[in-house]
Image (tube, rainbow, N blue to C red; front, side):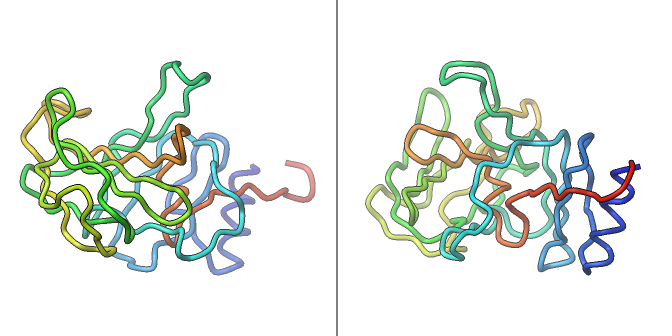
Length: 194
């Protein structure tokens, strides 16, 4: 009942829910109606309700997006969790900088290529498994190609996907909360019984 009321309230304000999680989380539609983001279980919001536009990201893959695995914050710094999101991809698909910044790492970690970009506000994006097109120290612009999806086994093996993590210091944040036009996810009270 509350989920239906939430969806009706969103529609009344001109917003539509792309997907509702089990607790009624909703996201507004993207600026580009061709973009699709599938939300799974609800996720914890990790950003303040008002954010400067320069701290917003675009997806690291152009075109239609499909979320394979959502972010799951660990209960402790060393606890189990999923410290990023996995986006469906194909080997060789172009990976773009989600925001302007400086490449802080470009190389191999264990068995896969990784590109990490430092952004405004102390945020860092890490993208893997990739074949880097940029080097550490290089300045990149939002939307600039920085890598291509690698054939190395990743989080979705045997399928290909791109793992995108966002950190501030040692704290991992949900990348979807930082997407321009999507986050943060905010629950509003619903008046009346439900």
